[in-house]
Amino acid sequence: MKDLHDTLKEYHFDLDENLIAKYPNQQRDASRLMVVDCPKQEIRIIPHFYEIKQELNLGDLLVFNRTRVSKRRIFLYSEKGRVHEALFLQQDPYDSLLWQVMLRKPKKLRYNECLLPQYTQDLQFYFMGQESKVSFLRSNRVVLEEDFERLGTTPIPPYFKRAANTEDEVRYQTIFADTPGSVAAPTAGLHFTLALKDELKKQGVEFAAVNLQIGYGTFSPISEEQWQSKTLHRESYDISEKVIEKLNLQKKDAKRIVSVGTTSLRVLESIYSATEKTFTNVVGAGETELFLSPGDTVQAAEALITNFHLPGSSLLLLVAAFAGKELILEAYHKAIEAKMRFFSYGDAMLILRA
Image (cartoon, rainbow, N blue to C red; front, side):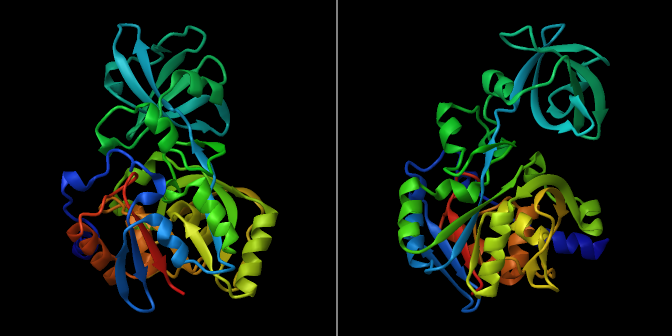
């Protein structure tokens, strides 16, 4: 196992707590932007994200994730009055009343013990047990998105080390967000404003939407099992026929596809056929457990907009697969030297491969 540990260790780095952006920048598109130019092997830092206009070309297609973060963090109260923080991950595909949940203090609960959200009696949950780090709750009725909106709070990342506030309800959503279901934001999209989007459209840049529902696994470091099996946590996505036609036209005309975020790239690479040089998978809903790391070929996009990711995470490995390990590790070293802001509310990176 030595080679495995040595390889994964390369993607872990020490980060000063002060470099973790725990609150959003005052202005969405005013974060700094690091440009990583792969053909030139060049790294440079631009003062403001909105200056990305200078890096994008007429005919570029920006593919964004339109997912919306649901208020899936709910505080539940046991029969003995204990508070159990619950993050609702996903509904069982075969049982609409059963949920997979990240639950605080599950060992304090008995099987079938009732848990109630605050301020309501019409919705009840029953503890069904725990498997690994995931707990199972059964509800007395189908839980609707309206219930999450009414009872929940925004599930901001754990590394913020604070409670969510009203500002997070707005700023931890992208301007593209319209399809609820994620427990984390597609953070590259957080840098865009409506004004910047309009300016880019006037410049001749086009936009297309995919949807990938982001799970809590996005915050988890890679395990040995995942590395060996080359699979990740499963996430659901969907894509329209119109978007696939647009993507294939980009490839045919040799124009750039710019992925806005690693989640968008995960969808694109999941539906791209390297042998046929087209996006060929079935239109509509699907699931992906794609795990990309250095050594894998990533051909679905020519550029990637992303944030600075957690050490040892699947997202960092995906970015390294896209740009090359040595260049990305150098870029992260320079970002730390320049005191750039890291993670969800942090600064951005634009990786150019063409």
